[in-house]
Image 1 (cartoon, rainbow, N blue to C red):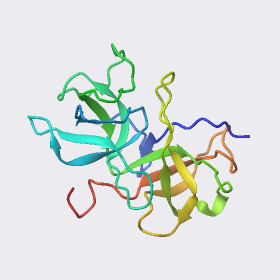
Image 2: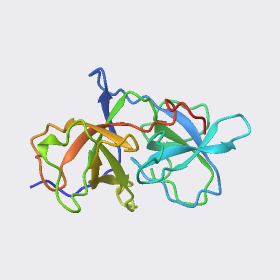
Image 3: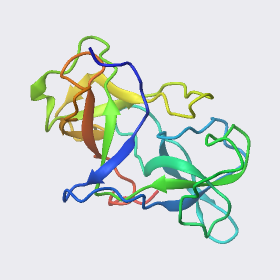
Length: 198
């Protein structure tokens, strides 16, 4: 039986097979942000929003078909130029609502992410690989700071509007096809590779 432990989008590797080495970019979160941001939350660049130095602003992505995604939140930065994840942070890893901040985002379009399915309406079958799927929002944990977002099992299909492309089931001794399975996916609707500007 799989554990029910959602964590949003967790970077695992690159599409080439190379392991993920922690590479991130820093983005700006404006004080008008009304949603707490947790590790693994899908973020998207905001139209016309940036700090005074041109660092683009981000907010929580919209769950569901056609919702663009820039990347996955990986932590809070001390400043706009800090590109290395610190070993220790002087605040909680999640960002409460209404606070201006800089955050680390794993935004490489070639990243492969692990994500848990919600299994609402039935668990995904092994043949779900290579299909598209949307995300469903979930409340993050103020204890673990992890995202509550999951893949929405009932949205599985082939439409180009799907937010993620399922590559394969995550191969691990504690993961199996069935309820709350974890899958490896790429962002299908990536704001960086999209041909239309934000």
